[in-house]
Image (cartoon, rainbow, N blue to C red; front, side, top):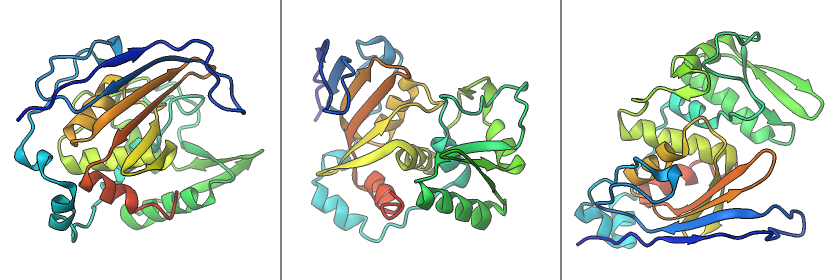
Length: 249
């Protein structure tokens, strides 16, 4: 059985997103899970290789939830932390000219639970300490050990190495980090993630495909900074990871 790619491309100009924002959505697409698609139509999707589906994809969600009811998500700390990094007005990872070699990342001072989670993860799993500095309403996180670990995954300024993922554990951990930083639950197994990470859009969609996510909706919002927002249905194992940090979100 093969699923069919359903492609819907709509140009929306001057659409108000909410009472708080009047940013126009420049383009929106909707995709179901592809099986043998060489590439997507939009430029952002060129080169995305679809993986073959196996029988487990078509099993009912109830069956899969029963099968994996005792599954315990395991996080690979480096990949989770990579997923939390953002590339807008933040550290230029991969640039050897960056002056503050111990600056790791930053969060709003309202993100107390997230900051504590990162501190505990770094201390317990990596035996690395983080120093916090408050600057206006932003909490700056400093750790030379963490920045050195993160730098090892970059090959050029803001460019992650091509063979970044070798295992599904790494893929799950990276996606979890992105959700931790800029994601939210929409209900009915659907999730939203804002893409301002170092992973290129094309590789992000390949990541979703590799983890059997489906029903993608992609919105590109024209603004400064620009925003790309993706919604998708999370399969059982991805959702197990996301649920594991729901108290932090």
